[in-house]
Image (cartoon, rainbow, N blue to C red):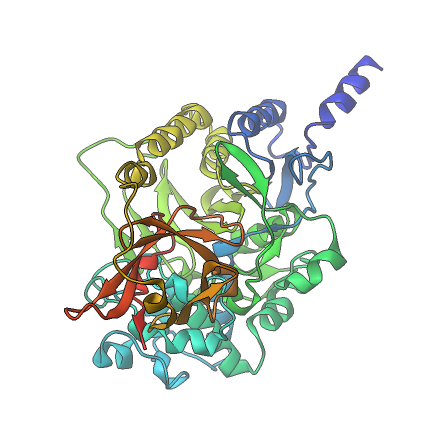
Length: 510
């Protein structure tokens, strides 16, 4: 009876599901205790962690709450946005179409999307499906994401703006993680099949795998129920932010799923694309998406924590070695959710970590789980990575430096009525500065959730006060630009962050 009471009391904080006999040597209680403490230490609202081994979900731990300030807790069926972990579903869909003879990996993108264009006409004509799925087209990491983020543009309209994204490196001579290229892949899927990415993923993957709680539209969220709320952070505190609709860019990051469903996806991939005797992914497809197409340098002159000898990107999957074993994985970031999926095929082992906060220990949980199952005497990943996170946060003084350089008691040299009007950004369309109720308003025609109020900062610089909660950026300013005749010709953004590069927008006045 006492043992039962202890188990019940423990389950108030974490729920564990353990099945199968293959991994009974693993101390699941130790795993669970570690994860529970990790969630507390990182001040994470909630997390769900699943481990599959030899075709079964052998561990499912759920921690924290669905929403700060409320008692409801997650379970293995709780919905989280998995964000860029959706990219592996996109490459799988492309592989299925290749198997059916409807596509070829080396087909030119322009064959299916004649309007597709990059920074250079020759490059535009030669970019292949493999190129866009392996981030080697010449665009910088996250460059151009302001085109689609919180946008009301269609996928086709987003793709038509890609030609304005600046070149970062030579074609096929580097790596630049590009959400835009996966949006492009989704549009190819739609063009070839006549169905949306969401319809294709449901019919071709979710239904065959019995992933019945995975969706790609917010319209289905309330109907499904049991979902975590996304959280951002401000002044070292978590706060709830709204779900954001990514259905129109689902091919790059729109899937919403759960530990239980992702466990089925991991088992499917560890079984090389075979489900219930049905081969959905051929050997050729499996080998193609798990072959490095873009390689990153590894320092072979120094030891590293993973005994790593290679590191690269396949098609929708990151690839490296982990203590002598192939590691296949990906991470994902969506407003208020950070997630990770990692597989060790040689061990028939997979780990999924789903969290509903932006200060997230996804890799601490992943590495600890992998080390435990591989028998590696590893470090205390949570403590180590939390220290690194905190040190990085302390060293990031971009906002405090800007605020410290503010010059008070200055006045703008440009009259307010001269800065009013419509400006155009080739990347994201019209941006208007208007006077309303004695305030200056910043209005994005194609990005209504980026609307803001402007207040004078100093000189001809204005501070941006966003109307809506923003997960990835906070403080920002814009500086009015004039020509030699002091006529307003545009403005420049300065919004310090690592994800969305407002400085690329360069609005000019019509």
